[in-house]
Amino acid sequence: MLNAIIHFSVRNKLVVGLFTLAWVIWGVVELLRLPVDALPDITSNQVQVITVSPTLGSMEVERLITFPIEQASSNIPGIKEIRSISRFGLSVVTIVFEDERDVYWCRQQVSERMSLIKDEIPKEAGTPELAPVTTGLGEIYQYVVRPKKGYENKFDLTELSTIQDWIVRRQLLGTPGVADVSSFGGKLKQYEVALDPVKLKSIGVTLQEVFNALEANNQNSGAAYIEKGPALLFIRTEGLAKSIDEIENIYVSRSAAGTPVYVKDVAAVRIGSPIRYGALTYKDQGEVSGAVVLMLKGENASKVIKGIYARMEQIKKTLPDGIEIETFLDRKKMVGRTLNTVQTNLLEGALIVLLI
Image (spheres, rainbow, N blue to C red):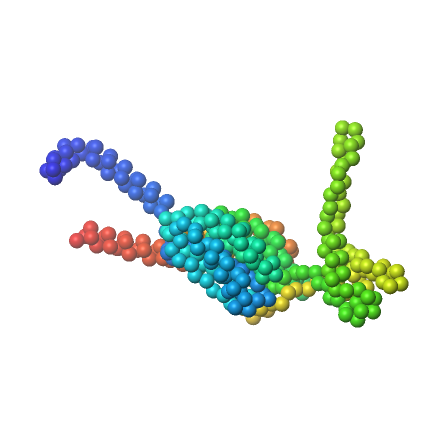
């Protein structure tokens, strides 16, 4: 058999040469398409269910949240194991599936089970949510949003956080291969209604009345329509509060003397922020806002980072004057150095073999 192959190759040099050339071209094309990464992701096929419940201790979290989720998910086909962590205010259930199962099929099955047990978990205990389709090796890009020199007094931490969440993050989420953008640092903007107990008692207004008034007077509503010739005029009212003044002028109730009571009569409305448990600092220049970009499981880090860089150039054009984005960690350099090391070793090894 071997002699026949040798005779055929000697007699048909052109055919063998063309066949060899075709193999070389095919190998180069496949090499360029090969997804190479510095950190191959060997994480198991898993779905995480995260529930945040700030008011419950670890025992209540285990009994009211973690156990119902584990019990509802235990009969899903293809499960290898279920792990869970119950801590103060937090429940994390990790459901590990067989490797041949599609991750999106697994998430669909878990999501269906969560809809079945939504009535078993108390509303005040929190809502179970699925973690993004990423792994511990998915943190491929990190950046900070900070004011430029001379604009430090123009933008506070609340404005930096708002720019990050509503301008930068929303545009980055549309980048191919990005699973999520996890923001941190800064202060989360919220409208704060600080009630005065003395005024509430003196006027005779309860806390529940103020809460109901804010809820009822901060929503749009629609009605029917009016026919006017060939056109229809739809009727709707706009009730969403858009400023502090509108919140202050929300009607609450009437006092004992019949005088209308508004929110501004019993509370101070201002811009506030929830309690922070950490901060992000930039070198020695104070606090800033920033985020970590998480990559979808199975994507190529080099390709995703190229898309992020291109999208960042577009985002920078939409930023307010005086704001800049600075990258302080990405996997591009590490991937490039790893590939250079591999290429050098392969080339040296091939040359040694040829010479010998």
